[in-house]
Image 1 (cartoon, one colour):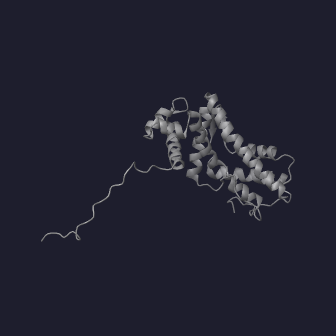
Image 2 (cartoon, helix red, strand yellow; image 1 turned 135 degrees about the vertical axis):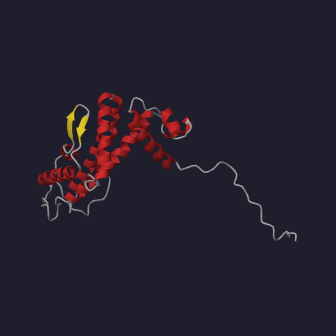
Length: 231
């Protein structure tokens, strides 16, 4: 029996044009993730934009549109790491100061994630020790922005009447110097990870000592503050 015209299936229409590509923001994240792995495999000196383009299966034109230079790519890597080190900007006004700082410093991060971010920090220290260019990038887009964000948060708390300091930026530097002490520098370009639990306890003691000097109404641990378990 022959098929009537009404029974025939309509022809499948093929889409025209090129397949849709990922948005730039998504592609940038993918490139940074791949470049981070290559950075740790090859080191700063051997990492090139051509190698990143090849690994990501991108044209050089596309890569250069998103990251015009190696400096831009390394900057994005450092910024990604910074976002794992300090949770700012953010709204913590509803929390006691001790709990707010505990969250700002990601002090409740699990051990695997803590070890991973330390491993990158250690690698960055080693590479920056022999590369002035990388040191400058890590200081400008890592340390300096971290201090600026923390200084802004302290200034905001001062405006709320919760903290009393003459200079918010100096207070931020003091607090960061204390917290950085949780990772011991054992030599030029080398650091030692103390372990997640020991680092957490150290950072919470830094927070306690810092707030004991600047909080308008010091918050005792175990009540409005934090105990050794962050509660």
